[in-house]
Amino acid sequence: MKKYPLILDCDPGVDDVFAILLAHVTPEIDLKAICSVSGNVDILKTTYNARLIAGLLDAPCIVAEGASRPLLREPPPLGTVHGRDGLGGYAHEFGEDRLHTLSALKALDVYRKILLESEEPVYIAAVGPLTNLAILFLAYPELKSKIAAVSIMGGGIRRGNITPYSEFNFHKDPEAADIVMKSGVKLLLCGLDVTLRATLTEKEINTMKAYQSEFSEFSMKILSSYTSKDTAIHDPCAILALTEPEKFVYEDQYVEIDTREGITRGMSYVDSRKSQEKKPNCRVFYDMDQGFFRKSILDALKPEV
Image (cartoon, rainbow, N blue to C red; front, side):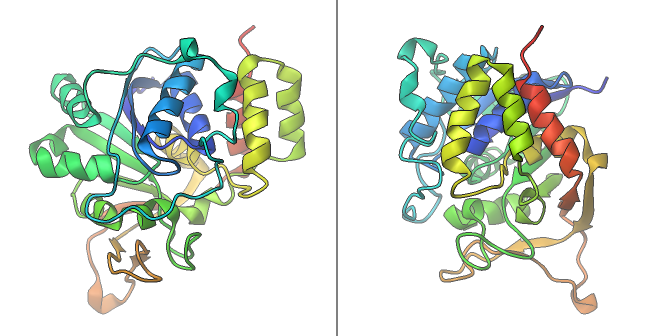
């Protein structure tokens, strides 16, 4: 069995919960660390939520706090999709005794330590703004060679969600996205083109109810708030694209990021003109087996017998 030593970079966020869950339960993945970043909510809340989910799952990994703001810009207003606390208003249901220990090291130092000490290349799944990765590449460019691939939830070649052209994570920190896209590291991009198919139906929700576990009940609560605003559970796609790429439709392309202010801020696009042919820098995922996605979420939530 191929093993994937993995650092998960996230901004929890309801859909991040399911990315953390999949990274924790997938046998092929060795989850080394969860690094928070400001995104769906501010850094204090995303870090708290990362600690809470890691604690509820009893995940044997590092949890570290990352960047509190975009690289160069004032952060745009926070969204409301995930609720004020990032978890649909349900983070308060658990006491601080359920929180995973927070590392004394910041995310940049955790990245450096894991990459330097690993005997094999490390995978990164980045499902929030790409600020932490951009800082890593700027501070320690020599460590790029220690990265096997970065699987990203972000962007959208055919559409956006914050503007008609721009997806939330890339819109939040377009300069960071631009640095990562130009990094030369192997990149997998699960943008809105594929993640909008990452949905659950009433059938899956009813199955969750039947599980009657603490985590499945918590999952149903946070989903009930979230899916009233966004039906797609985007972030787990970046985990599944690593371990089950055959379940996806993808194309190797050259992706660029628009860093200008305005309606195209953070836009990810492919220049397909023959006269501008460039070597692909990214594997772009466009479709997936929807039944596989739904089964993966249910299997991850299913209590151990």
